[in-house]
Structure formats: C-alpha cells, structure tokens
Image (cartoon, rainbow, N blue to C red; front, top):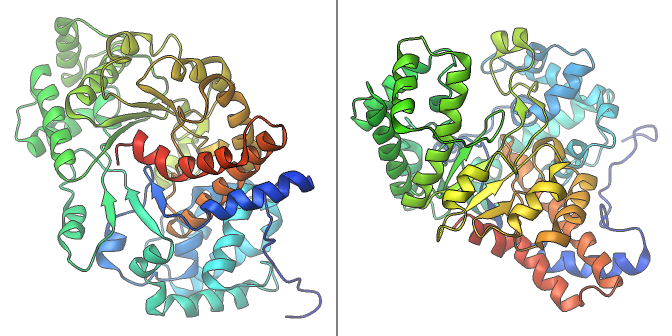
Length: 473
C-alpha cells in the first residue's frame, strides 16, 4: 500500500455516542451483546446456498449483484445494471472484475450511507481487507477477496457458523415444495436452523398479470380445486399448514396499503369468479386483496403463524427496468402509509385474540409515533417492526426509538431484521443495530431514566429475547 492509498481501519467505537460519559456506558452495553448469536427472522437468502455449500463464484456476485442497496446508487450515478452483472447469469472473470471496479471507482457515492458501514465491515472483518476501495485499489482488493473465496473457510456453511447465526428465515412462494429446507433439516451435518416464510402476495393481487395461472398452480400444490373461492381459501390454508410442518413461524405480506376491510362471503366469491374470468375491475381486485389480508389474519389465529406487514412501497417504479431485469433491482420506492383506520377491521376481530402476533413495519417514519406506537401500546397482538429497508440507517433507527418507546416501550418492538439478499452483510447489519441500541440506551442511563443494569437487560432483550418471543422462535 502506497502513501496515496489510505488504509481503511474500522474504529472500535464506530456509531457509538461521541459524548464521553455516554460512550463509556455504550461500550459496556455493546460488549454485553456483541458476540450474542444472530437471530434473523426476516430475510431473502436462498436456502440452496447453504444446502449446496458451493464456493461463492466471485467477489461481484457476492457483494454487488444481489444487493439492490449497492446497485441502485451506482445506477443513479449512470452505471447500467447489466454492467453490474444484473441479468447476466454466471459472470466471467472479466465481467466480475469490471463490476467490482465500478463499485470501487465510485466509493464516494456511499459516504454517509449504511451501505458504506456494511461494506467496510464485510471487507475488513470477513476478508481482512485494509485498503480503502478506489480506482487504484480495486484490483488488489478483488484479488484478495477472490483468493479467500477459494478456501473452505469461506464456503457458505463455514461463514454461517462464523457469523454465529442461530436462526435464518427465508422468504418463499406458497407453491414451493421447500425441498431445500427439508434437505437441510434432514442433514446430520447441519445443526443450524433455517426456516421458510410464507409469502402469498401474488395470490392475493387478482389484478396482476398471470394471477389466474398462479392460482391454478396453488391448487395443484395443495391438491385442491381452486375453481371457486372456497377452494382458493382451502388451498391457502393447506399450504400454510405445509409451511408450518416445515418449520415456518411467520407469513409475510407486502402490498401498497394494509386496509383490511372484510367482504361478505358471497361478494368475495363473486369477485373471485370475475377475476378468474378476467372481468374483475381494478376496484374489485383491490377490495378482494384487502378482504384476503383480513383472512390471512384469521388463518394466523388458526395456525399460529406470525403475521408481518411490509406496506407502503411502490414496486417496480421504473417499468423499462422491470421489463428488462425483473423485480428486486433497486427501483421500489416508498409511498405514504396509513395504519390506524386500515387495520381497525382486522384488529377489532383479532387484536385481542390469544397468541396472535402482528408485526407492522413501515418505510414511512411519520407513522411511528402517530399510529404504530399507540396501536402496539394497546393491542396485545401488535408489535412495531424495527426500521427496515430505506430506514435501516443509524439516524433513522435512533429516531425510531425516540418516537416509539415513549408510548410503547421497548418490549412492543420486534427486534432487528436484516431483510437482506446479500449473505455476507448479515453480521454487519446486526452489528450496526447492536451499536445503535447501545448508544440509545446509554443516553437513557446518563439521563437517569434507566439504571445501567436495566440497560444491559434491555440490550440483550432487543437482540435475543424480543425476536425469539415476537416471532415465536
């Protein structure tokens, strides 16, 4: 390394408070949780990664291609997605190195973002990289990471253990046979816990292209005739039971809103018939989805799956990109969210039902103190999901606790979720959360609102007890 190529060193106090008294307490709180196992109850890692345990093919496929946090900012700077390996299949060495150079050459784009924090931690703590990414260091860093990837210690299963992951939840289509989960569970050499999550969004959106074909496949998977509404409901119930039998603990839902207005059974059946015939109006399709979201809560009361809600995002905002590269390529954009009136029909029916858990996440932080905290502060079923996606950043998480805990406390929150497809970012994301929690709690101690022993208990609770209890792990 030359003098004009600065060394990249992770400061041991990164993200901790700057004020000396708070920092000292935060260090002790962080030390109490830094090495605790990782519980990841919501994410998007492919379970076959762990089943096959094949070496990661190259640095770009590991760090760049699967991570829309990374690709979206590069795209905003004028980099074409195909130049980053999106939609290119398995990358050649030349393609991978080129994508990696694009990341390093534009490292300044990530200043001030949590993505910078995660990437720095991944490079330094997993791969021992001490060079700051740049045009000049790109190839050297690439070679160092690529050299590690050829070692058994960097295969997925070895890293899973090194990351101290106790539970990893995936996100799965209701028609999935969950073969990878079953094979992992049956493997005597695999002692960790990887569980599926039931994600039925596409089957509830009757206006989406291909919905009729999807419903037919659902019927085939459930061995149930979905030619009428009653059969459709039975098929969903059957597939949920199948997921529970394979270890699932939650059902995840993401729609434009979370209105849960129920329909009369006859009206739901009529709209379902119209949708199968391709004759349902846009308004009828929305009404059907809102009714079915309420039905998903009923099913959760029956089968015990935790119901998680991730509303308020306009999916695939740029149609040309979606048509060329598909979903999850960085152009899902948040919209306003409303929960108080939207969830009232559901909560009037199930909000006090014994054992029902509903975790409400949002990308609209204006609802934290106005709606979500008051809901969680009354309904036994409701928990406030920690900041995720566009809000999983240090200052946003601090604002979250300031907005939520004065009304609902810490125990009505979900614990951290990493929501990632980028496998190696899991420990970095959880470490960021633990550091921020330590700072938030340290401030309460210095203000004499908590004793330090209570702060330690709360720090541990947020990392270990909360996610295990809320997600019934």
